[in-house]
Image 1 (cartoon, rainbow, N blue to C red):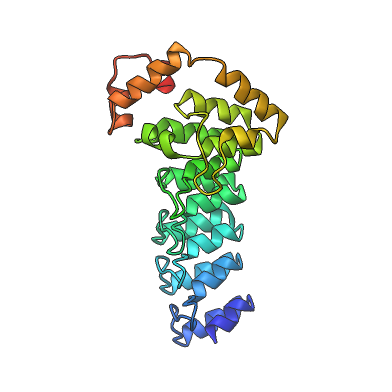
Image 2: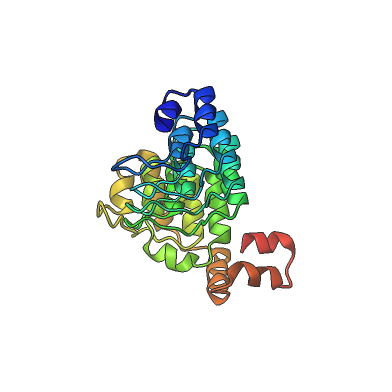
Length: 259
């Protein structure tokens, strides 16, 4: 009955059932959904709050490893819903069991900047990758979110290793974001990078878009700048505690930001 009441978006009925002793964490057969997951998926904030007040577990996941937070984000529940769930223990880094997709990846995928910023404030993992080797950076590039791309490039503790294997530059060429493509090249990405899944290189992908093709051509004919090379070398020497070591350097703040 509780599942039915939640799915019918009947707050009053949900409250009556809870007062009558209904199991607030009861799971559905097969997919193992809880009433909280359904309420989050339906963006029913009032019902979510009622369930949480009655002891609903915000950390539980269904058969796919989807959490209430994941459902809320995917259904465009907004920052308010995300904050409510996290305040009740939801894990901002709870990854799905199927492809290991994190809430941050989902938020980037749907273009929800508010939720993205909130998750980052709560220390969401910017270095997570799916089982298909798709990085959080690639999601940010696909969303053409320049500011989040910059943030990841600044904070990632293993950027050089990522640059050697990640297909973010291929994605940037695919979506035609030359600003992001330049950022990636400046941070060590190679024009010969290949998407491990499609097997397409930057050159092949860029050929489909005139602006990307011109960028690849002009960049390939130019050696890396001295400042770019210096940044790459300095970052390598500061691994693995990159962020911590950068702050210890006797440099002006603008140079620390550059590194």
